[in-house]
Length: 166
Image 1 (cartoon, rainbow, N blue to C red):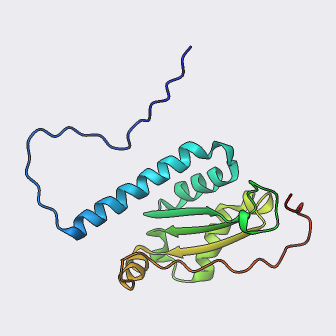
Image 2: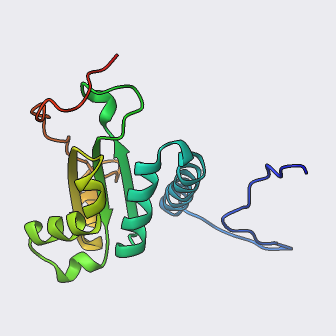
Image 3: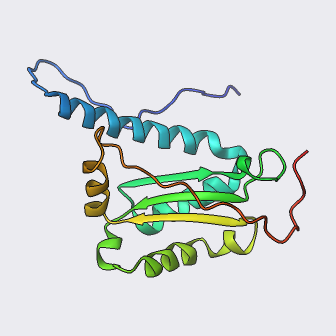
């Protein structure tokens, strides 16, 4: 049997005849939105060799229905073997955080969602959890309308149980 390696488009449509007028901001929003969707699709379709990243992405997507989600494997910045999945940063923007005002409560929700990963392979998790209004405010406060994502805290080295990088 042959394997079909074609990519299924996220959205497809047929256009016959139309006139459209877009200003620069509309084009930027369109490109940014579709680029994010394409990156998410590519990350999900190529992350088969990174099962922890894939599990984190799926659980956060299923639970929070985010308008923006970025799962970053930061393990390469730490003293762990190559291709480890031990240190992560997640940026989750969800309407669920409109109701949950407390930063501690938001972090608890994310931690509870990722309980299995935190009890297993994940050594460190940096969380940025924003409501859509907060996310828009972050974008509005920068010149290029890209939110400034703070760096993760410096790792303190853990308990020494992880094998060192080779």
